[in-house]
Amino acid sequence: MAEQHSGLMYKGHPLRRKGNLIYYGSMADKYIVMMQVMSTSKVGELDVADKVHMELQLTDPDLKSRDRVVKKSDLTDLFSAVDMGSIWLMRALSGK
Image 1 (cartoon, rainbow, N blue to C red):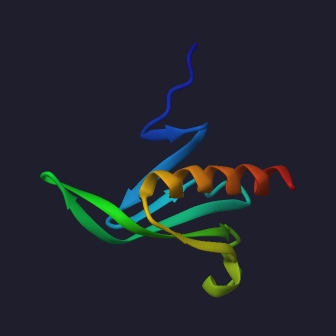
Image 2 (cartoon, rainbow, N blue to C red):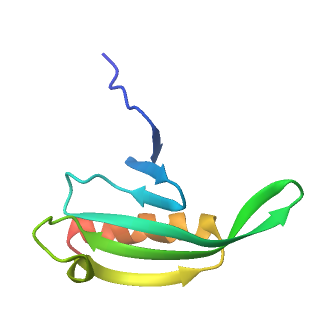
């Protein structure tokens, strides 16, 4: 029987969006990546992200929010942020 997933998956990890925040990874794992769209610009009729702040965070609920941040960066487009986030998450979960 095939395993069913609800929602969008990227490279085996879930992507969840809430407003201008995008969470990549599972809260059941030790790390997640949080991406925040800081600004957008119009391309035709579409709003396209042109500044994205991202953070690799620990999911430990006992830590203060500032202590959860392991790594952070600002990028100029959403594709680069998701791609970089997948690399950060893969390395963090593998212990490298």
